[in-house]
Image (spheres, helix red, strand yellow):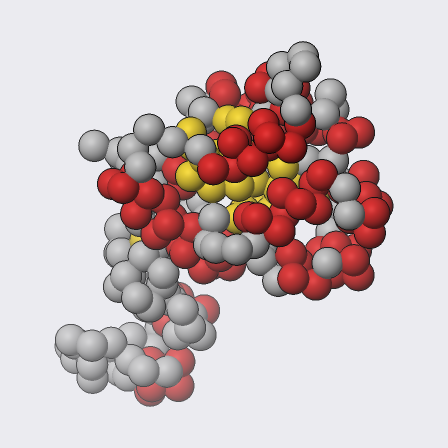
Length: 238
């Protein structure tokens, strides 16, 4: 019986696998290019090293990954770019949970025209997912000075969410309230852009700095899934 030429480490290339008398006819070797994670089947339960995959592990039976901060038993899938961009935010969350345990989970920055549309939809999805959100429509009381309330909301939240919509993009050049909030959030790794109804190309045209902070996109995930990912990001599970 033919013996495999690389029984321990596996073959380093598809050509090496094809030359092996034991493995050359296996479909898994013929189809694999030996790229990222290709030495293992998607259902193998293999978990990559923390630094090489930003603390992600493969989901059984799926093409995505679990984040290291995912809720136990979670089946939510993250792309490599999402893991990379959210990891610094998660590290900031873990620090503030210890130092300031009573903070709200997040502050929702949005354009004023979206307050009863996309922003309200995101707020509802977040609260359903168990996230404590500062949201102007719920937290800005009558007669309360707007900027003072916003400053307090920012200071008492672990992270900031920026809902990037066509209305948000069109309002950025005017340097309104959203722009002031944005400046505060960009000061540290506490910012997660959520793109909705537009794209990063349009955002980059008016705010290259914000566009450099990749986050979540409702073209990739439904609003409810975005909310679940934020819930996993801001919660420290016991």
